[in-house]
Amino acid sequence: MRFFSSHRAHDDERLLWSRDIRYANRLAEAIPDAHVLELESGTAVVAPASLLTESLAAEIARGVRNPAYGLVSIDPGLALEDRYVVALSAAVQLSGLADRIGMAQSTHVVQTKTLDYFFNLRNRHAVQFQPIVELATGELHEYECLFRPVMPMLPQSITAIVQAAIDTDRSIELDAFIVRSILERAGGIQTIREVTDQPPLRIAINLTPASLLDPQFEARRMRDMVRAAGLNPRQITLECTEQQAVSDVVPLKRQVKALRRLGFGFAVDDAGAGYASFTLIAALRPSVIKIDREIAHGIARDDAKQALVEAFVSFGRRIGARLLAEGIEKRVDLAALKSLGVDLGQGYLLGRPSPEPLQPRRLAFRSPVSRKAAVAAARVAASTRAVPAVAVTD
Image 1: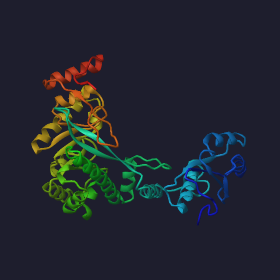
Image 2 (image 1 turned 180 degrees about the vertical axis):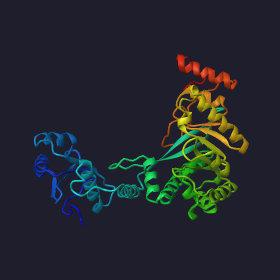
Image 3 (image 1 turned 30 degrees about the vertical axis):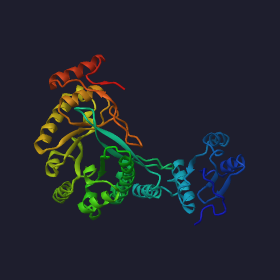
Image 4 (image 1 turned 180 degrees about the horizontal axis):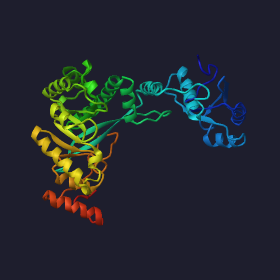
């Protein structure tokens, strides 16, 4: 049905839903421009966001024994015939009364609606760039492209969006959208860099194994997609991120070989956690092994983590892969990772994600020392708050 067909829509509105008609009417009386719709399930009030505020809703609720209600912002980015229906559903769920009025939704339904909302806002989402740094020199290696959903009425992390896509069998659809968005953004930046005589942009893009095996990501089609964006496969590292076990590694292995023959880099994400096992990594032969952030965090004071990273460093060298540590936030951990032989690093200490590809933070690296000496120094710094082995100079 057409919701609020007689209502004159504005760009900045809110909707409140309540089962208490007396409360809804009192609220509407306090707002000259309010529009009221009585439904079988309750009453909806729509008004300009500047007038229908949380403080006003709470103040009037106190006068009618605090009725349950849900108040949400209406997204003008949705089609007019959809925006009020979506807002009403969100307000009912927010009120906590969805079960009582028969509007409770299964997890699958919620995830499907979340993804539909995500795709409806396809022109709003953002791409951010986080620097990946050569730990030996502090120089930039490349940027990881991080996709940031912008969903005003239903804020979601990219992790939640990816999981919803996996659970509803839409991960390939999601990856195709994200990859094209990233390539379009990166291609625009590359054009500017060419005009201003800057080095080529190098980026890493995340994909699930299911997408890597889909025909639209076949190696030559992937190469053509990258070239159409004004980029070269040698500027791209594809990161295999997995939230489900890989049932058959053989076709994935063939695809990775084909991609690498065309010049793409290939990384396995979250080594040491989840499904990124030594067996999977050995089969895929990546150019980069990314160490899970939980392993990098606090490694200066954790012998077990140091032993695991040592094993990955040795393993990586045997198969010709470089080690990349994610989530580096403390200088003592950075010093320990360097001493253990980790090649690359990423984290807030080295550079935060940003809308534009910025240079990493300037770090002064001291002369290399033995692993035992560096780890010992890192522990002393952590326990005594002494000046650590790596100092920030910016």
